[in-house]
Amino acid sequence: MLYIISCFCGVVKHRDATFHSFTHILNFFTSFLWQFGFNINLMIFTRAFLNYKGNVI
Image (cartoon, rainbow, N blue to C red; front, side):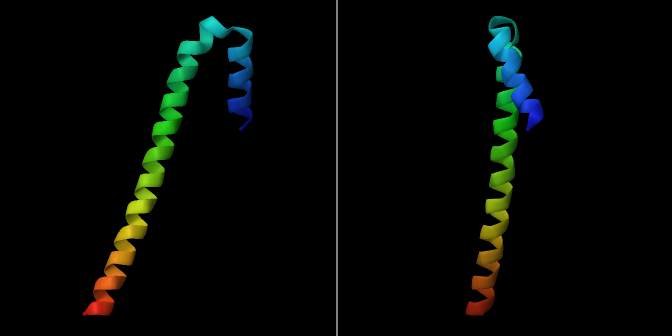
């Protein structure tokens, strides 16, 4: 968390120089979060689906 705050402060100080790298970090972070959430959703869905199939059979 502290790293993100310091990154943001750096962007505010030297906006033009660090904006490009900051967008790269942001893109990486959001894609990582999306991937993480997608994996968890898939896991929950498959578990629920398997439970449903087990109950039916």
